[in-house]
Amino acid sequence: MKFSFNHLLAILIVFITACNSNPKQEEEKTTDKEVEEKVTEKEEQQNNIIFFGNSLTAGYGVEAEEAFPGLIQKRLDSLGYDYNVINAGVSGETTASGLSRVEWVVKRQPVEIFVLELGGNDGLRGIEPQETNKNLRAIIDKVREIHPDVKILLAGMMVPPNMGQSYASEFQELYPKIAKEKNVNRIPFLLKDVGGEAELNLPDGIHPTPEGHKIVAETVWNHLQEILEK
Image (cartoon, rainbow, N blue to C red):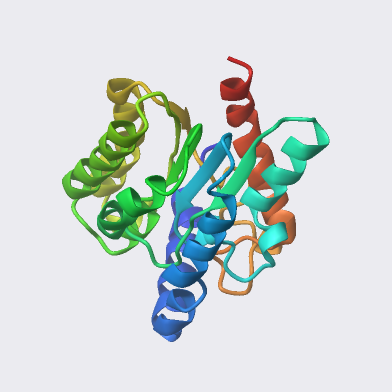
């Protein structure tokens, strides 16, 4: 899916405006204690799928069962797959903070599939792509160190070109390079057909509505199913 310059510019403006208008709101959506409770409930399960990301994964602004990880669980159940989804998303997460907590998350239980959705907040904060690249690779390495047979799905993100065309291009190129060199599966763009669509996002213009999450879930499922069927 291609976005025009003006389309991406509009996404960035509402994103930055929303973040600056209420900086504490997103951070308070999901706490480490809540993540621990969700993880603990599932730790005896063997076929775990961990969704590890930021507010998009955590389901900011919607009910847990309406967020795309919850919808994936419903799809798995309806099709008879014996897999258990753990939503380990934390609002406001960057790749650096994700790296600092990933070991704690994945050590708590067996992990069959690890879905990594991070980097969007790095881009919005103008963090150097090299740093994001380093952190994403380190997260993948850490998960494999603890669970050598884990299957990893990396969710790609984009930043608008008004961050600087060079920056935007370098950022977008991170994900396919990492996926190829680390031999992991990849979703080209997590928010395909949702990003920039006002009716599919909350008033902040950033986070998907329940309807938006349904589309994101379809995008994720199309790639997750390939892993499940291997």
